[in-house]
Every structure is written in structure tokens, then in C-alpha cells.
Length: 363
Image (cartoon, rainbow, N blue to C red; front, top):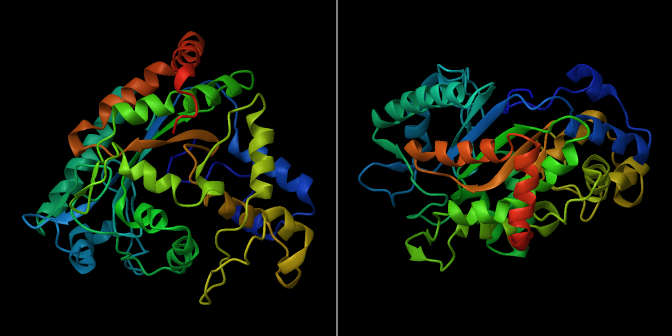
């Protein structure tokens, strides 16, 4: 598994992927299957932690992005300050920002839970210290308990997403600007193990989501849902957020799905990134419909398309479990340790599927 904040290792250099024009749907599916499900013995464990950010003493005050950038200094992501050096935190985790300026740190994967804990805690301590010096603090729940959603980052991707999701309802803007998740990254496993590990990662989802849910209150109101965060995700765009029952050939099924998923955005430099309505990646490859006026897609375009999925489990060469609410800064370890234990070997994987079967699909 590569560092969780990077793409999985692709075939060839970035320049080659940009130059590699996809000939047909079959080539696109083959590429997706090869980069999203990489085989090997399960060794590494990674985690991505998201937090809402608040002005200490006045958590309902709208976040001032200039104060946040000053606090983060050289760690500020370029989505907020394009001229930032964007250096990682001391233990190696880069900082990124969600559209509402939720902070995310992506820890480099480690070979042991002990090593992962040490690295994450070091970077969390550094981050909280930087924020505290500017009167900022991290939130303690998976959703903003005090403020309504407000997009702070002014990037063409996030602007296009906001426009795309708005007709569907409030789920999209809430997911983008108010939520914070805990994403756990594990190796996919050997070829003969992948289907079982993929199924177990999904099967344990509803019980673990319920067990660690902490996002009932949003913008000062009781939503009535244990995880208003996950409700917002599921109400964003079903084709991007929901998963069918896992099958016996995850790589083939995911590759097929990626071809039939509409483009979410279409990068165009300084022009608006809104994608042609309903255009799937397979149609883009085939030059059908609205795709007739677009350039031919490349492997790099398909890489980008893969980042527009927000399913409970997302394959990125490794498996990224995305369904847990973000935990308070000092409480992220228990769910990570539990997931690591449940996926530790074949016997626990099989037991997970058996025990969690009654709750399967109950997102």
C-alpha cells in the first residue's frame, strides 16, 4: 500500500498517464481493475483524520480562512494559499482541507498499530499547537455542531460540485462543508483474499458506523440521527455514495461501475468545471453524445474520475473504509484498532461476515 494521501502506484509516470489515450471501454476497465485492487500480503495500516475547525470560545463564529492559513503556516495546503510550500507535518502527514476548511491529516501507512499511533499523535500534537496559538481548535464530532454549511475554499472543483449537488438537496453542501470523517486504510490482500476482505469491510460498516456515531447535532439542532454526517453523505448523489451487495469479483465489478458512473466534474483550467449532464466515462471514451465535442480521455482523466466516488469502502490499490464519523482528537485509536483486529486474518474476516450478516446493507 502506498501513502494514503497519494494515488495508488499507477502504470508509468504521470506524464505517461496524461499522454495515454484510452482506446475503448475494455481498456478503461482493465486499467481501473489493475490500479484499484493491488494484491499482496496485508502488511500496512493507514488513517486519515478530518476535523472541523473553530474559533476557541466562539465555536459558532464563521471560520476565518486567513487566521487558519496563518496558523498552519508552511503546512497550509495550496487549495487555500497557492504559493504555500505545503510541507508535511513533522511525522510525515500532509495537511489538506475540505471545502468548508475542515482540516485533514493523512498519516503515512505503518507496519504496526503502535507505529501508526506514534506518528499520528505526534502530528496531531503539532497541529493542535499551531492552531491554539491563533485561537483555533479542532472539533470533536463528525459534523459541525455549531454552524450551517458554508463553502470556504474557492476552487473550480468545489464550485462545480456545489452546483451539481444543489438540485438534489442539502446533503451535498452539508457533506462538503460540515462533515468530518475517520478513514481507515488497509491492504486489499492476496488475490484469493480480496473478495472476502472487501465483503467484510462492507459488512462491518453499519455496526461500526452505529458504534462510533457522534454527529447527531448539526448547526445547533438535534437531527434525530445518530450520524447526521453519514446521512448527508448518503443524500449527496446515490450513484457516487451507495454500494450494492459486494460480489465475488470486486475488481471487475468496480471497473464496470466506474465506466457507467457519470462524470462529476470536468477539469477545464480557468473555465467552469461543470461536467456534461449524465455523461458517463464509457460514453466519453466512445465519443458519444456530449463527448463528441470533448478531447479523448486519458489514463490520468480516469485517475481523477476515481477520486469522485464517496462510497462506504473505496478501493485505491488498498481499501479505504470511509463510513466512520470523525472522532475527538484523542479518541481515534479505538476504531482503528478494532478494524485492524477484525481484518487480521482469514478466521476473523470470515467471522465478521457471519456476525454482521443481519445488518448487511443497513446503511
